[in-house]
Length: 199
Image (cartoon, rainbow, N blue to C red; front, side, top):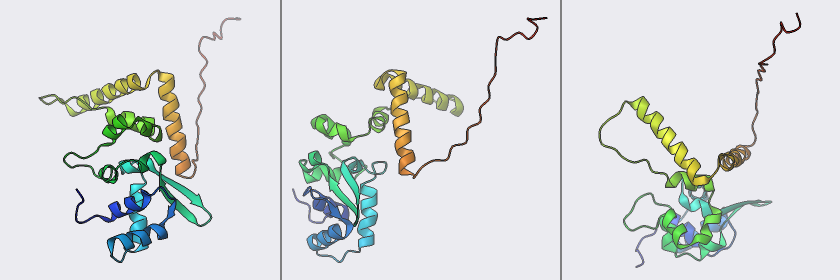
């Protein structure tokens, strides 16, 4: 059932749902036309920044942002253009009855999984069991970290695979931040050498 009033985020999703690569001014024009309202490009740019960030919005996994000589373009990955618009709207929400969740969409459309960073998805599927009664805060925090770490390793695979995923994620984050300056202090200790051996 079509809802009477859409949000600006939903109008932006409608524009991207065409599968075309669009710049902020083009999306702003489309949203203004579809909504019948006067829209500022700054407002659309701000919403786009949130929608395309997978750390803040699940839809961000499926939005491609490309730098061109005219500025950034935004588009949905091909597989996402084949989803119903309502499912894409739901990915921008944190709550709501009967909404499509990221996990549900991946289960229903496994072809989407390749667009999701494996580390992020694994972290999302880990849920700590809730227990009645209170424990000391330091003990429960330490136990939670240990439990989450061991489950995370078990789900991803061997420690080597886990390390590879973490390093890949770190490199990606560093490149997104524009580089990294690293200072390294190295201490070397030699064990097992007996200085009195030749006396």
